[in-house]
Image 1 (cartoon, rainbow, N blue to C red):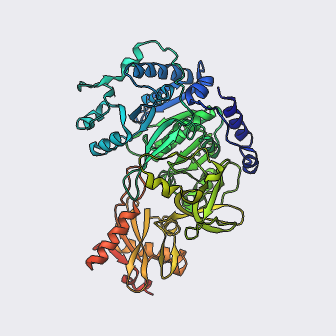
Image 2 (image 1 turned 135 degrees about the horizontal axis):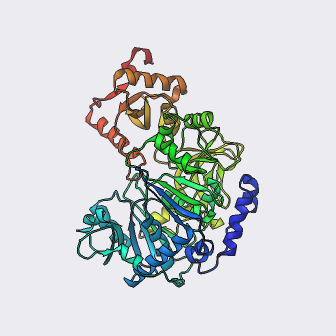
Amino acid sequence: MSTALGTARDLLRTHRTDRAAAVASFRWPDVGPSFNFVHDWFDGYARDNDQPALVIVEEDGARSSYTFGEMVTRSEQVAAYLAAQGVGRGDAVVVMLGNQVELWESMLALIRLGAVIMPTTTAVGTAELVDRLERGAARAVICNAADVPKFDEVPGAPVRVVVGSSDASGWLPYATAYESAAVPVPHPGNASDDRLLLYFTSGTTSRPKLVEHTHVSYPVGHLSTMYWLGLQAGDVHLNISSPGWAKHAWSNFFAPWLAEATVFVYNYARFDAAALLGQIRAEGVTTFCAPPTVWRMLINADLSGGPGVLREAIAAGEPLNPEVISQVEKHWGLTIRDGFGQTEMTACIANTPGQPVVPGAMGHPLPGMPVVLVDPLTGEVVPGVGEGELCLDLAAHPLPLMTGYQGDPAKNAEAMAGGFYHTGDVASRDADGCITYVGRTDDVFKASDYKISPFELESVLIEHPAVAEAAVVPAPDPVRLAVPKAYIALVPGHTPSAETAESILKYAREHLAPYLRVRRLEFFELPKTISGKIRRVELRHREVDAEASGQRSAGEFRDDDFPGLRG
């Protein structure tokens, strides 16, 4: 078990509620030239450990629990089975599974072998799989029987393993792995900077990029995520995210198992706030992380029963609106702590345990994360109070940062230009060093010569009781060049009528400065990436196309449609 990693982990736990002390004293651990998360960390405390490592509860109440010791044994069986099929160090393997024990077994097994994991959502289709297997040069695939037909026309990946019953030709049964006794798999001798993970980003503006991480950038780098989440040994951690995306590995694998915490999963086909709250109480969940969409639905449920033993409430994925934070504080006495990170790195900015939270702000840089704001025009660092693009200073050698986008030198040069890693996100910083999200560099726009942050307007719109989600984009205007237009998804039970539109526009007018006024509104099913992020680029293109056609959208409402809102 890596002493250096353990020492660094314990320092962060010691300063769990003292961010300043943690930032001042933390340094990324030197884990040596050949670190392997499973051999050199997980096995050290997990072998023969009868504490629960993974608990999975299904919608019908079926419950499965696996100890740390069982996860060691099961992953050794799977590793030996895959090795017998020729999978070894450096081989890329597509793992396309849901929230099931085989997912965690496969992750552990592939790390044991020094293989390269390509996490893949079950939502992808054949065309996307062709692209992923080709660009990732996959040698093997592990998937459920229901997804086997998707691979019928997909070339490559000579080793194909199926979980569940399938009579498809060329597929090997995963269950065969359990037929042999567990035998320790030798350390593969991987270098610490060997590839470990290949993630396809969700592509909000272009086709997915292939993000490459090493045996240290995520496994060790997620100490920052552990610190943000406030995880401690023995915690029961519930994170709501889908397998195949980076956040799942963040909070359902690396961060909790760095902390020696239990991963709890609640599977459901359709979201039920009351059922989720019941599970949080029944299972003794101590730390809970969910995307803003889930938090918004939760505050519309009955929160009066309390959160049980819940200690930490965290939001991730997109900035959280202040109204949601206020409601949870009112009912539970807990402050939802927001944070920021990307597939390309681990958590880098957050509101951490024990620190005051500025509503709507992401917080401060996490220990070990050299966050700077850079002026996009001059390329210079913005000192003190100001606004700029969120970047990491490459001179500080940020350990959690990706090695780059595989096969895309032009994109790498752009992302690492000027001695900084460029996130593509704009933020502001106040006098206390607290950082607030402004928007993607390509989402921020000007209207009447004022710079508009969509998030600022969306945060107000979402406070209206009829609004479930909102996306603000620039709509071309002959006088102002552009005006803010809101695309609105309604809460069930509200109708997309002129009365509803007027009510929302009126509310926004009353709660925003005049220059931020939302002047147009359309009820619309918001386009999203496969990982659930709103594709504002599609909405912007829709506005440009409408302007070019000279036709106003039939479902669009404008403030001057309503006598009380004109001017």
